[in-house]
Amino acid sequence: GAVVSQHPSRVICKSGTSVKIECRSLDFQATTMFWYRQFPKQSLMLMATSNEGSKATYEQGVEKDKFLINHASLTLSTLTVTSAHPEDSSFYICSAASTSGRRGGELFFGEGSRLTVL
Amino acid sequence: AQSVSQHNHHVILSEAASLELGCNYSYGGTVNLFWYVQYPGQHLQLLLKYFSGDPLVKGIKGFEAEFIKSKFSFNLRKPSVQWSDTAEYFCAVNLFSGGYNKLIFGAGTRLAVHP
Image 1: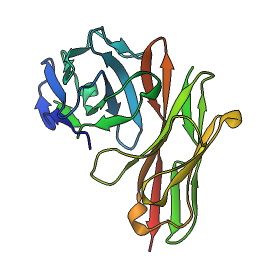
Image 2: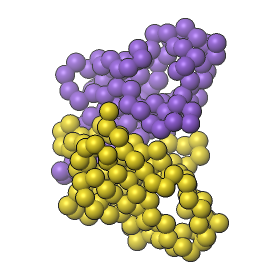
Image 3: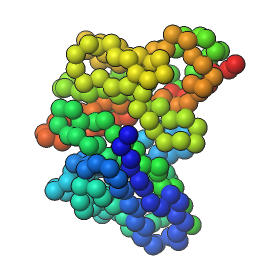
Image 4: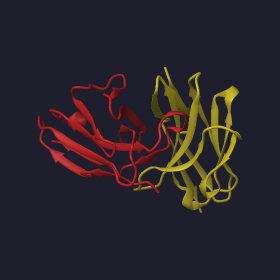
């Protein structure tokens, strides 16, 4: 099946620094990539939708200046947490869809990145 | 606002018992529907999906789900669960609006199956 790779899997940083997380679709071109955040024992919260060739669409309540998303190519999307604070500590998961439109939504998920901000 | 509701947060069953997990969504437009499973320590995997056609869809590992449009529901079922079905189950709805896809997840249901 399709494979999505996410890197790094774990990152620890100091408060105030920025962290970049990469999401790559390894064997297909992803027209749409999604970034989710999962709090302990909770569901995935959609942060933003990134469509190749256009700006990311952020969900209500998600600060676009804090969580910068760049869909650089059909196989790479990056999430940069700028000026990270301890409350940004979480599990971030990316996913990619190989198709869009009426058959969209079948996603392939990365392994997730656990961010810990000290 | 668009949302997905899963009625059961925790379900505990004995092996061989039947399973039904509820999922309802609120969105009046066209949707695609999914159930994902997350086994302990692993990432999300697709169980089954509905795009169109027969509203009763069959997925992997003996799971099935029925789309009832009038009830905005997509409940997951399995006639006889196994210990290996212990996992967290997420219902997800894909909305296609304005040229963009958006996949929204329910809160998840944690299933524990006892031998």
